[in-house]
Length: 147
Length: 315
Image 1 (cartoon, rainbow over the protein chains, first blue to last red):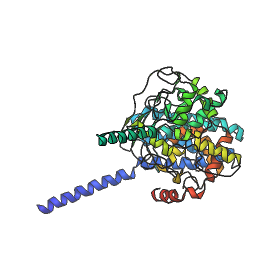
Image 2: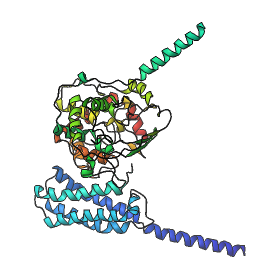
Image 3: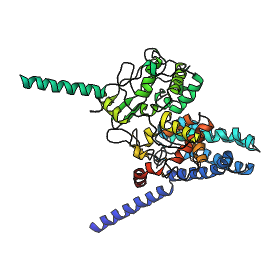
Image 4: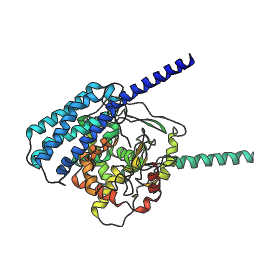
């Protein structure tokens, strides 16, 4: 009797840890963090072009815009209830409409820049500016600072 | 009998001394320079001084953006270790704001920390920095603020802890901490550096957040801009001297670009309370931002000795 009860506990414990492992593997908080790091890496060469540190290259710009576009489509799905934490501000869950609007602003700016397909720095500045501006606007309300 | 009169005399002397030590020190009309206030020049000062970051009325509980930054009805709350500060209405409304103030009253508030009725202001209003501004710039600022929308309503008064709640005590505090001299002395004639120092130490009041405070709430200028705890929230305000980990690796161009665009050299975005500051700096001229960067890169090691060690420990 004692043995079978211990076995049952052991089995339960195993079942619980298996479930936790399954949840840990499906980790939206981590996924969104890694995705945003990818966005930042894609922003770097574009930023260097805007800043005048690198020569303008239309293909690099379009590649980065494609990375942004993919991320903007996915971001809304990576903030399910229960995935709070990290640099994601509570405002994402308190004001989901505002967050969705911020993503939409970003997505619209990306589409406009893709469509414009600028071939020079002067042509790129006015369409890429709003894409970067959207990063800042969204972070201002929906990201918390981690040192 | 003799003893009593001696006691009365001593008490009277103490009261008189205390009154003198804590009494507000104001400018008089003849101290103002002869200057025709220029509202256009005043707009640049308005953004440099960051007035809107505290005084613009929050919209739906969030900080004001765009045109709403010009609605200076106050109402923002600063929850600090000294107590709760409620930011007042400085819109040109004649009774709820500062529309009824004379030029002299405005200058005394900005540079002496004294209200029109002769009360001390708390240094949450950064007059300790504004004291270093040229009075003509303060006069231009008033001309600009006079043209902004008049907002109705006055936030409640501050709710401070003892002994900070004794306003009169600020007279003593000012004797110790209110100075017009530059923090970083230099014999350099580099006009860019001097322009940067003027913006950072004066109107820009960068030291108010980036410099740690002592137990009396005064800035510890030996650790000038060397980073500090965030008084209104969690975390820390970074060291922005050449010894700090944030700015040491940035070129002067990187600093200027950050202030203009809000992007770090890694293309991360500006965050926290610095967002509002950066948006103000973006409204200055390219030369202003370059001057600020040049100054930050130039802060001498002597002002960093203690700060550098501390900020390395806690960052």
